[in-house]
Structure formats: C-alpha cells, structure tokens
View 1 (cartoon, rainbow over the protein chains, first blue to last red):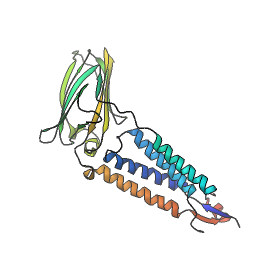
View 2: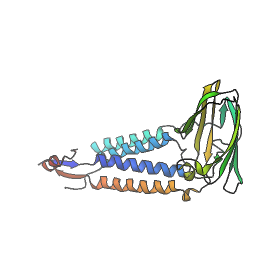
View 3: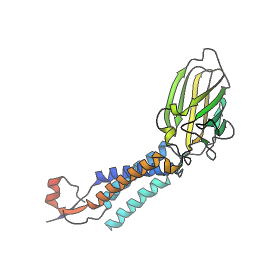
View 4: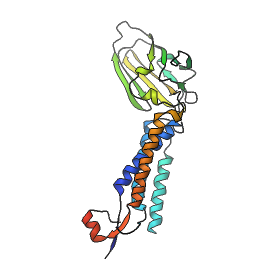
Length: 64
Length: 200
C-alpha cells in the first residue's frame, strides 16, 4: 500500500490571506508601513502565497 | 532533497514579498493651484497646518487630523477652471469624486470640513503613527490642478480599532495556519482518493 499525504492548500491560502491582512493593519497602525493599497495587496497576496507554500512544504504528522 | 527544495521555494517567496519597494516618498506639492489647511480638534484648537506647495503635510511631517474636529481650507487655482471633474484619492485608492460647473468663473474658494461628516471609517481609524498619502485632482475646461500631501491621526495606536481588528484577524489566520500544519497527514492512497485529497 502506497502512502499519500493529505494537504490543505486552500486552508493555507485563506490562513495566509488573513495573516497578511491582519499584519498589514498592525504595521499601518504603528506607522511601520505607509498606508497604501499597494502594501495591503503585497502583504495579503504575499502571505496567501506563503500559506499555500506552507501547505505543500509542511511535514506529514501521521496517518489519518 | 525534496525538503530542501521546498524550503528554498518558501524562502524565495518570502524574499520576493519583502524585496518589492515601497512607493516613492513625495512631499506636499501642488501644480496648477495652491492652498492651505488648518486642522482643529473638537475644542477648536489648532492641531496642525499645511500648505501646498509649502510646509506641512509632508511624509516627514504629516498633517494631524482629529476625527472629532474640523479642517478649515483655502484654495485657489492658477486659471479659471469650469465644467470640471474632481476626485480625492487616499492611500492610492479613489475616495470621493464629483463635478462642478463654476459658472461665476471663480479661482478662489474656502470652507470648513467637519471631519465627523466624512464618510467611512477613515477619520476614526487614523492613528498618530500612520502616514496616509492624500491626493486631489481637478480637471476641466481652462486648466487642471493636482495637489497632494500626507495626513496622520491623533489617536494612539493602542486605542485604534484598526490595531485590534488586525490582531484579531491575524490571530484567526495563525489559528488556520496551525490547522494547515495539523491537517497535513499521511494516508493510504485509496483513502486519499476517496476523499478527494491532494497527493504529495
């Protein structure tokens, strides 16, 4: 029997999206980043991509 | 080897995200017109002034805006502009726009804007650390005017709903990220196929 790994790229995408959006709001609040639509897009899209990458790079924890 | 390549992809994506430069910083400026702004708090005390072109309202010295206060403004155009369209862009996104005819051929105007009447949450969400680029444009018959500068708030970050909203949204995202890690499990091929899972 071959072993496959069940991954969650869609969950990773939305996790990254929320982390990026939340991080952008925090960085905006403290003036670390200038408030622009560009930075908001970079952080949300960038973290969403990282979320997908995380889903495919994460090690399998055990059998379902 | 597979693990190393995945790590490189991860680091590459992170570097790409961080390497994209911020928009170029610009000072308060005006072309085809000039103006001045006095920002006041709820008590009517002046909290900031700016001129365009001129001092104040720059990225290094943004104009403080009190959400409960008022902003008195004066402006003049270098030429008579009629049948014009105007728009205000905030943080790179369109915020307000409209048209005016100017039948009296005026080149000067002034007024007082009650900030509590400004639509949206902008005024109430500005912190005293934020720097927000604001740009106004007028284009019509006889000429055009462009003015821009930076504004900030008077509320400390810890009292801003933006910070707490960001914290809550970010925490939900982190919890979902933990779900991604916890949900990555080895399974028999037949089981994965029957569930529609993604095979590595």
